[in-house]
Image (cartoon, one colour):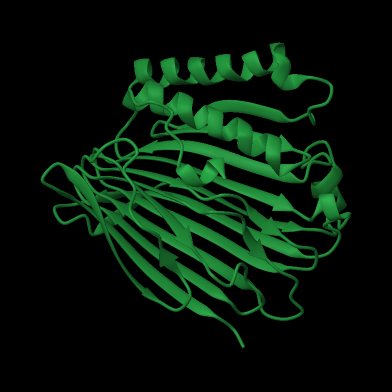
Length: 296
């Protein structure tokens, strides 16, 4: 039997406090709202009690952040896409961020088990003045269990759109990335222009509902690249640390992106967590406060 779960999470600003309210259908929940940074920023953990998705399962997540509110969403662990011999399992996220609002979308990795059939889609609609820090991390196979990703397919879709018009009903595409990872595609999996043997790929991104000023963009990219360089020259890149490849760029005037390829998920996620702190400091003048579940 397939599981179909849906959740709607809405953030509003009430008396200088970001407040989260949600409705759910099926096995998808939000844990208690936490305020480790004070009332202005609401942290929430998205929980899927079954622990993973099999063929035919669907997770449908709808988010909204009203003007002035700041919501942060993460997960307690990986989103697992298990082996399937039939239909694909799907996770679909659609978020709307209003004028002057901020969203941090920081789920832990999507874990593609061998022989999975999976779809992972995220769409973010940004009003003028809205800002977003998010990431997308995919781990292929179970290297610690010696289960390589030699069969299976994983489809990805990451999209950012502008909300236009008086009531923000019209949308203008800003950034779209789509791809299909087929385990049998050896050029993609192992070729130098593909994953080059890496089995974890991640993108950390900052997006704005308006053009990022040149000064702000260049200062942020400089800070991110300095953090990447410090990893190379410090103990973080010791011989015992699995090698990874990373770089920062601005693929669109409203987007900054950091790309990471790594043999394993742990070094990639650790780096992205650190760089998310750099983005917070440079762009929002906030400390690199992490969700509590990341310390578990």
